[in-house]
Image 1: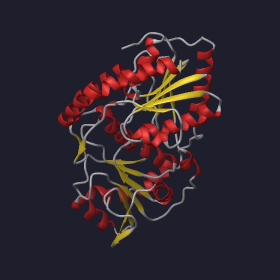
Image 2: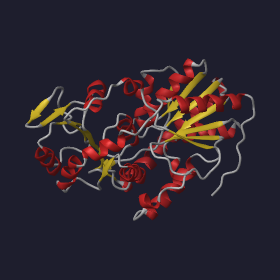
Image 3: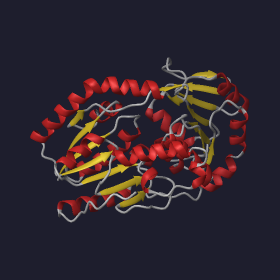
Image 4: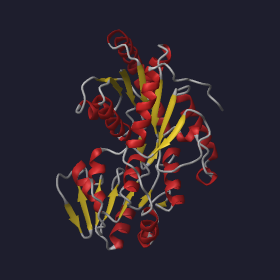
Length: 365
């Protein structure tokens, strides 16, 4: 089957899970062309042929928060040149590939291609949980307006898909048809990792080295392997119980698999990997990013870790460390059968699409 696959380029989480699905599709004999934006292009191009670059929207982050005005201006000015390129790539694809089905990881141009050519379109992402499930009121409390805005955006992004495969480590009730929930998609390196109980904390901080954070980490007396703070190093740099490390996939995964706990933002990919490896996490969501707040609050509700709006108070890390045994006990009950359930559901959906028995249905409120 000829499949057009769209990958949004905001962060690398979408690209990393799309890599897993693409390897499965190609291994099953499907012919796949990929449309991707941002950092996803480089990531996927190193692993697959047939990856096309397309303009995508992005966020500007400063001081651990989304800068809305700068984000809006950057996307508007970028769209002036990016949109014509999207249109050109779109029509080139129409002429050269003739897709039979579309899979979209929160990417709009491939969805548009499907709708314009009356093709089955399948959504695979974690964002649709905001629109297609009934969320616990406790994760929304105090952020009702932000939730409503995010829900409206997610609903408008990919409406009327024939199937929504949602990846999630929490399981809110599904409220819309053509929707199924699946465990997070894990890259092969995570599935191959053997979790052990080490004594260090893994810290991933992309916003730079805040003095309060550094002091709080030092006060734990626990070895903290810190990624993202020192971008100027190519080897380990020790400062007391802190070990600054350069970002590298193998070293990071090894430290993740052997740590006692994780301190990071509330991005879905790392959180899903931590839960799978049964590692407690202290999640600090980016300000003005409701999806990360959602992840962090559900993590806390499930007892898999804790969340905090910031690390300005050194007691936050101290409390997290003290509660590690409780989080470990709760995580001991988490199980996941790799990626098998989602990939099997995807295969069945594609088989139905090829047979012409997949329905679009109506889009409910």
